[in-house]
Structure formats: structure tokens, C-alpha cells
Image (cartoon, rainbow over all chains, first blue to last red):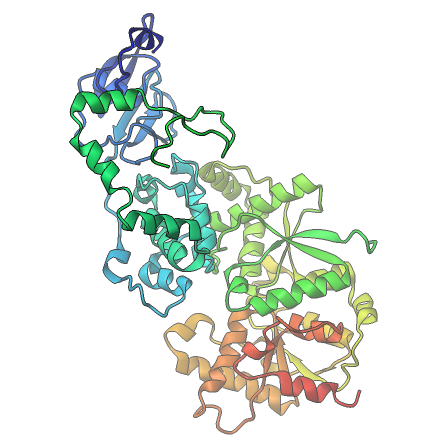
Length: 264
Length: 301
């Protein structure tokens, strides 16, 4: 990384895996196929190193899009483990398979009526009655790569606390690994998504600041800036991006201001 | 126990006490405070499963209650409290208590569940019903001294149902055929306790979902008998019994020949006896409004 900065080359993310110079090679197993890969790589980069090209099972590479949910085991250990391929570092003896997609029940797409007179709790129990099949085994919670208490938020929904469950499930990235493991066939992530939508629309206090900003966007205030960006050629855009002013990581909230305040 | 520092007991509410039976919980908590203990709700809790598995080898049904017992044990360790878990709902009490019994008598089951959950329950928690706490820890004689309202005009029948008492070997709260705990409770309050044979008959339980007519019939048998023995109202510890006995009276064809009988949670009556403000206890939410009977009982005393 320091080399790149010295050469003043832009840092490109994800296009090529550069293992550390003195990295040891370890053995992993991708869907039954053995590979030798340098240690310190994430599962995603190790797979690319081994020759895989991703069409599914890869998204943001930053641990937040939920596309790269992965199951793995370590040789000699019975435990089934989970992680996001872009966040989990490979280990010696790791056998893994990605789950890029898992079929889940999405009742909300069919039935959610924005003008319904049902309470939030009734909407959830009508759309997803299967939550009452939960036996409380906790497998979902142990599966979640985001360390969310999945069983906990299903418990909130069962006792009618939709806002509580929406809060508890907030970090969900919809990877679907909980859904794949549930013995009661609950699609936890979709129940929670519906709950957060209901909570956002009906239960949480409205933010006046957000409404004002939305109005600014609608008024066309930002259109000229976008048009200006759209008219730039690639090199100009690159320069603009690389030379952009960044708020320092440890700046106190509300204190830092950019030099260029044209657009504020 | 000193008044500044009330005993805090880990408390498991259960789903119904957060929804339909919220008045049961609120009245119980306020009474506890008055009596001198605090019900300390577990932070993370899930549904108890509502019914204990009927097959011996179905361990899955023990997972949910085990999770609850683990939370309670964690809480007791943290706060160096007595290893108790107090409950109100008769269904939750039944499920949790039977799980406690299963783990105590069959350690292999506990071992399997611990391995499955990847958690460690040491088996220390004793599940205790609110009534049991009043009887064994507070003492009904002490409770009687705390009563502020003259209850002598109240003719109340205790209704036990099934879940609080059966099976005796596993719950051990009282004799399932001839129970006295709620009688003694009512005596302590100073009510005229009405003893009637139907006190342990089944109300129909969750048959209400599929065969509401049958539940009406069973409720009628219980309520008409209680009325015949002179009861003005029933008290119960079970939200499902309460719902069945209370809501069934909407079936006017079945109930044509008797007057309405209000069905109260025992803590709603306790709150009145302790002279508490009953606002928020949801007396008005019962199908048969108990307030006229209460007003009658309080009149002229």
C-alpha cells in the first residue's frame, strides 16, 4: 500500500490479489477441490487466487452487502462455521462452500398494503405466521455472520414488539445463512426486513431534517452538479476522485469542513 | 427484607403477558413492589414453547425453555441472587418447571441440550410461580397483614385449570385434584372463598382455535357451577383459561340462563386488596366487565 502511495498510483481494489512477499502457503478446499493459497488472504481473494471468477457470491467486498455468505469447516472439527467470504481469512485445513443465494419466503411482496388498518404486530403475524413455529433452538443466532441475535428478534416479533425486533435486526445484511439453517422453515431475514419497513413507516418518529433534504433533492438543486460530473471524461473523473478532500477518520463530528465549499 | 432494598427476582414474562394479558403483568409487578420484592425481567428471552413436548424423546421442545433457564442462571450469577425464576403465566410455568424437572432427573437430556445449544446450563435455577412465592417466601399470613381493603364482601371462586397443577410429580405446586393454594390466597385477602367442584376442570384450552363451541360448553359448565355455589367472580393464573372463560360468555345462546361472571387474574384482585390504583390493570379489557362486581364489594365498607 505504501508503495502505491509513493508512486502516486491510484489504489485499485479487487482487481488482482497481491500476496505478502513471504507468505506461507496453506491448504484449503473449495467445494471439494483442494487448493494451495497464500495465508492472510480472505476467502474471496483466496478463491480468486485459485482461479475462480465471481459472477455471484461477491458484491461490495466490504462486509456489508451480504452476497458472499459462506459455510466452512476446519479439518478435525465437527463444528459448522459461517463467515462472509470477503471478511474471513483462510485457515489451514478449511473446507468451504459459498451460498450465493438461498430460497426464502417473501410474503411481504405479495400482500403488504400500505394503507392497512392492521397493527404492526398483526401485519407481521399475518404475513409470516411461520414465526410461531420457532422452537427456540437458537441455530439462527449461532449461524449469523453479523453476530445478530436472530432468535432474539424473532422472539420480539412473536410477542408483538415490532419496533424492538426491527432494532435488534438492524445490522442484517440479508445473506440468508439463518434461513438456510432454520428447522422451522422461517425466513428470518425477510420477516425482519418487513418489520423494519413497517417500523420505519409507522413506528419510528419522523425526521424533519431528512424531509427537508428530500425536498432539496426534488427541487433540482443537485441536478447541475450531477450534469457536470456526467459531462467529465474518465481521466478528469479519476483525478477528481483521487484528489478529493477526505474527512480525517478521527475528526470530531461536526467540526471538520472542506476547503472547497462551493456545493454546501 | 428491608424496605430500601427490595429483593430482585429474575422474572420470565412470556409472550401473552406482553400482549393480551398485559394487565396481569402490570398488576403483579405493582403488587410485588408493594409487598417488597421486585420482578426483574430477563433481558433476552424467547417464547417458552407454550406446551411441553408430549413425547419423551423430543428434545427439541426443551431447547427454548433451556435458553430461558440459561439466561436466568446468567442473571443470578451476575447479581449473586438466589437461583429463582419467577413466572406468572400458568403455561410458561408448566413448560419451564417441567424442563427443570427433566434436567434434574435426566442429566443426559441436559447434556444433549447443552451440546446442541453450545451453551452451558448448570441446572441451578428453580422455577417458581408468583403464587408459590407468596405462599412460601412471603407467607400468606404476612400477606394478610398487608391487606388494606376490606374484602369481606367479595365472594370469589378460585379456578385452577390444569397447567398450574399437572402433572403433580413434575410441578409439585399443590394437589392437582384438591388444591388449596388459591383458596389460601383468597382467605389471606379476606375474601369469602367459594369452593366449587369445577375448580380443576379443563376449560378447553387451545381447542378454542378449532372448536369454540365446545369451549363455550366447557366454560358454561364451570361458570354456571361456580355461580350456583355463590361466586360473583372467578380468579385464575392462566391467560388462556381467563380468555376462554371470559370470552366464551359472548356466546349468548350457550349462556342464556345464567348471569355474567367476571373472570379476573388473581393479581388484579390482589391489587385491589392492597389498596393500589388499578389504572393500567386492564380491568376494562375483559369481555365481562368486573368493575360492577368490584364496586359492589367495596360499597359500604
